[in-house]
Image (cartoon, rainbow, N blue to C red; front, side, top):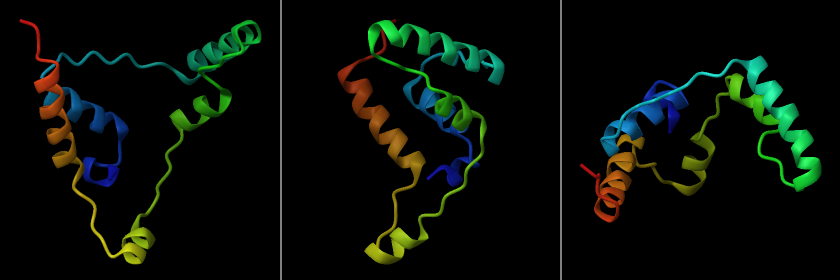
Length: 102
């Protein structure tokens, strides 16, 4: 899935933004800043019993992991729909229900 977009979630999000026709405002967060936010979230989670950012989230956000779908495709005898087609289709339905405000 991600391979089609060059292996980057950032590229997927850029395609989604383009398909929806909205502005692309990305803010990069450093690992240390995200780690600090995870610690703050942990502290607040003590009171709210709800956590949004864990140290595992921080680690996975900056690690590159590659996965293969070959076993699934072989076992089920199917091919996946290209991610660009899925993004375009979902964006079309979304824009129909939530048109852009001008």
